[in-house]
Each structure stands twice: as C-alpha cells, then as structure tokens.
Image (cartoon, rainbow over all chains, first blue to last red; front, side, top):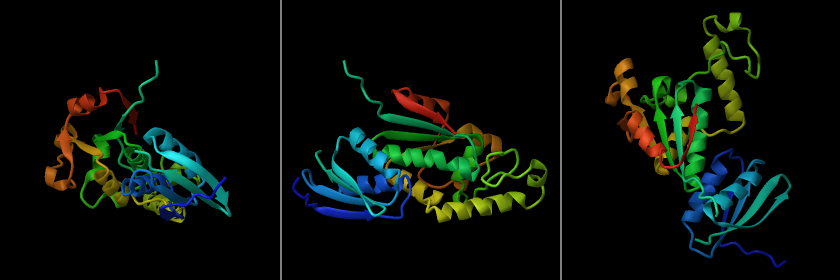
Amino acid sequence: MSEIIPHVTADFSGLSCPMPIIKTKKAIDGMKVGEILKMISTDPGSVSDVQAWAAKTGQELLSHEEMGGKYVFYIKKVK
Amino acid sequence: MSEEPTKRLAIIALHGSMDLAYPPFILATAAAAMDMEVAIFFTFYGLQILKKGKIDKLKVAPIANPAMPVPMPNILGMLPGMTAMATKMMNSWMKKAKVTKLSELLSLSKELGVRLIACQMTMDVMGIKKEDLIDGLEIGGAATFLEFASHNAITLTF
C-alpha cells in the first residue's frame, strides 16, 4: 500500500470522549472535498468512535493504526 | 428496503447533580458532531444546570449512591460537608482523566447548534426567572420538546 499523504494533520492527544470526534468534525468542516485528514488521538475509545462517526457522517476512514499508545486515523472528506 | 437512519436525538435532563449533567452534554455534542439534530429539554432539577455561573459548581450526592468509586455508607454521607467532599473527589478524578468541563461542553453544544430548551413550568414552580438563566436558550414546554422528538428521534432521559 502506498503511503497516505494528509493535507491536514490534527493531534488530539490527551483529549477524552467526546472531544476527539467533535474536533475531527470541526477539522473536516474546514477542509475541501477530496482532502485527507490525519488525526491522532490517545483515547482508546476513539478507535470505535471514529469508525462510528465516519459511518454516520458518510466520510471515508481510509485507515487507522496504533503506534506507541497513539491512535492514528486517515480520514478523507468525501462530501 | 433500507432502513432510514435516525437523524435526531431528543434528551431530557431531569437532574441537577454534576455526574448526571455529563451524559446529556456528552451525547448531545457527539450526536451533533455526527450531523444529527439535537435538543435537550431541561426540566425539574435539570434546570439548575442552566443557571448563570452554576454549571461548573454542580455537586455529586454521596447519599444513596452505592456506586461511588469509594463507597460511602449513607450514615456518613449524611454528615455536613460530605457532599462537598464527594464532589471534590469526583472533580479531581475527572480532571485526572482529562474530562472536558461541563461549561466547555455547554458552549460546544451551542456552537454545534444543539437546541437547549428550558422548561417554563419548572421555572414557575421554582421561581426561576429568564434572567437567572444563561443566554442562548429557548423557553418552552412539553409540546416544544415533543414536536421536535416526534420526527423520528432517539429519546433519552437522564
């Protein structure tokens, strides 16, 4: 898989529920369709929450991974 | 035939203690971030949450609460100062877990377009005036809430 190059990177480390998805929504709102957001969180609940958020809002979760206690998500704004 | 997803969340906030003020705001802001339309109806003790300067000073009741992380017998919980102590403990755990303050969740709710409805009847019962409450509220009754909720909303009560 080729590496994903994000247009915007947002680090929400240290924030707890529901802030990661609220800040994600705000970040996505400020982006153009087709752009990719790299979002970093330390909240273990965000693994499930970001997937649910993407399913509900219709934005595309390209990938997510855990790296040294941090959760990294790549989200494409599709609408 | 595919199921039409629910787009609305209608919450009733009935209680005025700190622990019970959190779920309405956490769920309201999360739902709004998920592009849902949200309304919270504040009634009875829940109206205390909307009093000016009150939201970050709400307390936790140690009495008749067997689920406190540090269990407290009711006979101790009824002593003067115990409510303040339980509140202080809970606040320190919340701070440690970096839980967002209620005042911040309240402003986020407004920013995300959550409708905050103060119950007129409760205001009359408890002698609360419009000036006693924070700005940016709607004042209404059961019908205001029900009209919103009647459009296929998930309804939750806290």
